[in-house]
Image (cartoon, one colour):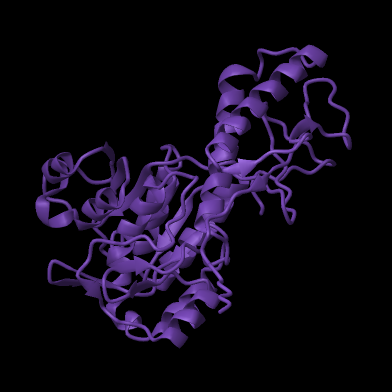
Length: 355
């Protein structure tokens, strides 16, 4: 995992709490906020004006701002469980003064000024914009602003799971989710890209001690029912699949294109951002870098992690938060080593029945 990596030979210049993410078999670090979905909106006809960001927490406000015919992605995000949506009104793309690439690049860069935890497009976009979003996500992760991205494809792509899996490979990253099956809602077929905002809202709204695996989604059916072999191939590729099991349509497994668990990545990102925000608000520039100050910082971080342990997010050990013995914590710099074991959800139950 490559979020906020620091180099001992090139220490950061700006004041701040820098976390060196070290991924081991049983102890990993992560980060992220919860609840907010960012969407660049293609069309709007209400009171909203072009090239402006709007933070909304209900569908009624979205209707007034953007018009009832233009907010399906926002409605899906709220239906999935998002507490709020940050929407950006894209300018009219004319191919000359305003190209698609220019419009989306400016939209993505502007979102960096707003806290959110999942980014998703307003329906279908080009392959170039999907790849650009991944590159943007990776850059922000390096700059201490981690979030997740949910992608999808066209209705034509959804007819062939091999195309969806190919897109998964192209967008491979631990924090990217690629839906490869569309959904039918109230008799209307939505492509995987059009339904992706629901998945984004679900990820944003799901507590970090819960998995979205086997979560039932409120749809009539999937636009393509995959065979068992196709589902297995998709899961091995890292694709997110909706499956009709005869009773419900459910998410087969909550995984990312980087073949990581969504629950795990969400928890890691929540922890990193929470710790940094707490340090920024309460400790940086306020504590002496001596034994007492270091002990106060360690105690605060450990108390936060113990809260998550009580909520079954992780398991701590005797050395979960300590001064990093590899580097001396002197001057204005403190080096901490944080270690814990992640708690996963039961996803495979194997039975041996003897008679």
